[in-house]
Length: 577
Image 1 (tube, helix red, strand yellow):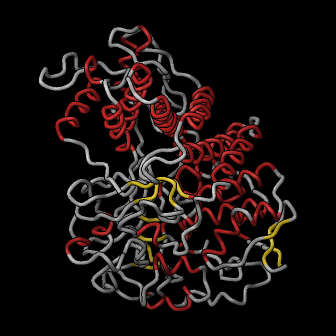
Image 2 (image 1 turned 135 degrees about the vertical axis):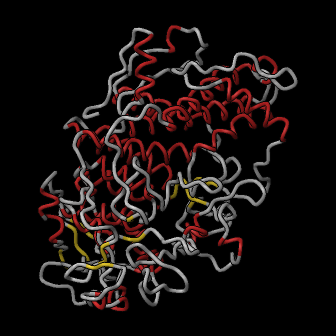
Image 3 (image 1 turned 30 degrees about the horizontal axis):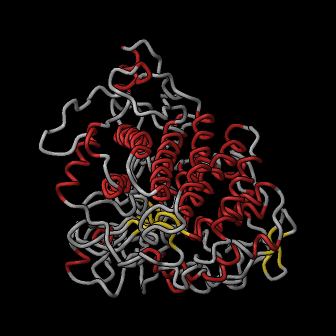
């Protein structure tokens, strides 16, 4: 199978064109590309050039990060990407003031401009009509994906679907409402699925079903965002999410991989039946550092108490089930903690003992005691694992398991979920995991004829922003556990459900607690525990406040606000900033 290896001279040409296409609201334009490489006037001459230009778009997928970087969709946090599953090895708080610049803002608009350039130039390239349509679909996919991420992060944003010259009056346009941008995103994806090939380079590049998977994600996001954040009509979007999910689910080429862990630790995901799109890391071309950060003396980021307690026992019942759960053995020690629990718990974090500063496990320590094992692969070893920027395990970007859970959640949010819906979606994921399947009467959730009654669902924390019914609660739990290390996804889920208080250390103190190690109570260990024995990962008095509505969006970069003002256009700052 061919790999995405770009001829170096052609790549330089494409990079020059990409540099010429910086953000449409920024003044840094490259007016004259070097004369010894391609220009916009002579580049668009062949399918090969079009394909090569499109390859640069794939850099927008963070995956496990690039090189030594920690800008990633998994494991790592920063001030704009905090979740409640993992505690970082140093405390991360929200920004309190608006930044002058924002890398995502600039990079996203750069990609949008490249996509708009493709959409204007490709129709005039002499190439097969089917392939021409495919690359138009690729451009629409990336434009949609990028505007979607802009809306998630910033809300109302400037929008253009044209390739703008530096002096075009539309370079500085007022922001479009987030709702209008999302509708444009969905329109792009509806068109993309009609243009894209069914298969192109297996799951290494975008195809029709990648677009359906993104449409499923976008529509579920918008439906639940409108329901919980804006009290607006959500049914149209939720139904759209179901329909897009079904398009993928009905494609027999996709199937769950028997080994859940292999989605996250495989050297090669190309052709994996569950992975709709993968970010590939190839020796000598692109590497990451996720194994190195979890297999060396660097203190690991650790699972929080709040997340650990979300793992059910194999009978499908929560550990604090009202009336009791005979399979739960408590958390007096690590053996009991993992006993009879959802097998994904031990596959991701299972060790023979907790690891902390006073007592490493196999040379590893964790800020919360739970040791990450998810990215380990017996086929990789030595310096290939322990050296920064030398890891080559692939990262999933879109998976069938996500599509299954999107379908289940959309069905539940519509209030029409049936046992047949569960069996064709979430129960496939649970069966693969090794836990009991769910049944429902449309509102309640049952396992083995026992109604699930989780006191956490009606806790004071949940009451802050609204209690959901039991079947929605269990679907959300499943999504959390299935994608426990997918920090970017979890953060977006929290915000679309309007559950920002999960990240607040006062409202939710369990988000800054770790494993229970009662043997440390009353000792002079460097690792501190509370009166019940739960690890306190940070210094006394460290707090994080989630401020609503401020922290539901990132601040618009103040430099861009000033640029717009200089052109007589108001670019409004987000609430609270």
